[in-house]
Length: 274
Ligand code: PAF
Image 1 (cartoon, protein in one colour):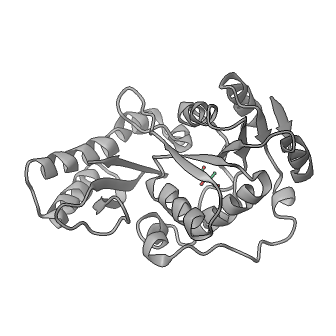
Image 2: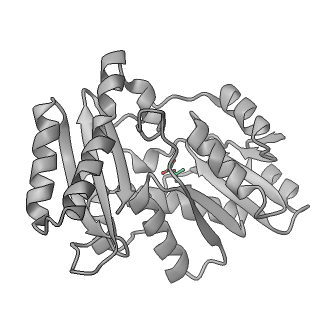
């Protein structure tokens, strides 16, 4: 496996291949990321993982400075998972000057849910992802399903900008108790870690209510918010949406339940398709 820090070296290396498959990450890798690498591997003729903690997608009060940087451990895991090339640019390499040109995704998709609570988040994500796409020029890119809205925003960007990239979504890996794997789980204390499963349990409770015939979605959402609040969480949203555009569902739509909530100082997100 090759570890490459500069755009020029990466381009020289990738000139040897025709069909790169890219897995963009911010590092601090867990088994969920490694499953994306394994998914990417048979797609192309070279598997590339990028590791870059993207300042553009963090608000000033968020965890950019404390986000764990674990390059050595990440590389060992990537190598074991069969990754061929790791692209880990410095901030100066990726943003040699302030990034004035940005990709602004449409508000109806990017200013709701995560984008509502993290203004500018998807502009930061789309800008770095488009830049990584331009650098790597992948034929395939794999994103995790835990970031449901993110993969949808990226799919739309790729379609609208006619990028010749096949976007694939990997399934969410879960710990034994059901907690979705996330780099941010590492922030949880032991007691918080034990409590954290309540996010997915509450989403499952929302699905159970739907399956039992409850049609009052506002009621299902309010009960889920209250259930987490009663346990000491600070939920941003617990919501039932239609899958294809994440808007409020109409009768007959395929559904997904999505939630984001803060436990102590850690913000967790999760979703389950109904
Ligand atoms: O999902 C992530 O880790 C990031 O948002 C991504 C896609 C690597 C862009 O920085």
